Structures are given as structure tokens and as C-alpha cells.
Amino acid sequence: MQPSPSLQLGSIPPETPFITRPGSYAVFFNENGEVGVIRNDYGDYFLAGGGIEPGETREEALLREVREEAGLLADIDTYLGAAAEYYYDPGHQHYFNKIGHFFLITPYEQDLSLKVEDDHTLIWLPLEKAHPLMYHDIYRWALEEAKRR
Image (tube, rainbow, N blue to C red; front, side, top):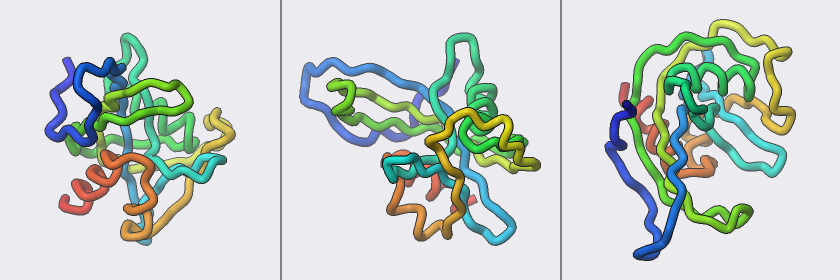
């Protein structure tokens, strides 16, 4: 059972249908204190992570997504918490409630042969620069939680 989000961001019009989309996301830093973020080919910035597949735990989803998007093998350090965000996706023409489970992780190896998402690039940024670039507000929340730890 997944814990309920401690924070709900965004809003949707009353009585509007939406799709709940649970996922797991990673916050991690390099030896220079820079945070690892994913930039896609459209120039959007995300935390590494993604949807939890049926039968997967949030931890299994996290480690799979980090491998697929960044080619990173990692250890999970701590659970930062859960936050949700309502948003409208113009591509799908639908509202979603993105429920993010956020973890602080420590990557121990990068193997680019594990990376399967060619349109995703791992980049390292100072936390202050990464924060305003994040595509979703829940990613900013997770960065703030990690900074407090």
C-alpha cells in the first residue's frame, strides 16, 4: 500500500475527471554538491524517475527508472515523502494527478548500456539553478525536502 501524499499541489475545475498517475523519483548529488536532473529533447527538466508498473514496489520502480533514464545503478538512502500535483496534459488532453514518491539515493556506477531513453540526458546543476527549471512543482518540493536533510 502506497502512503498518501503529504502535499497536494495544483487544482482542477470541480467535477473534472482526472487520471491518477503514481510514480517514484530520485534526488541525488555528485561530489560537488550538484543535483542530478534529467533534461529531455524538448528542454524540459525532471527528476529521474517515472511510473510504477503493476506489481512493482515504489523502490523497484525507482531503481528501474533511474537505470533507464540515466544508466545509473544506485542505493536508496531514505524516503523523502510523497507529494501530488494536479496538472493538465495538452498532449493527452486530460487532467492528471501525479503522485510522486521521492527518495534520496546514492548512485555508485553509471553504465550507459542500461539507458534506454535516448531523449533523456543526465545533467548536473547547482541546486539553486535546478530548482526553478523543474517541470513540475512536486519536483521542486522534493528538492527542498532533500536540502533540509
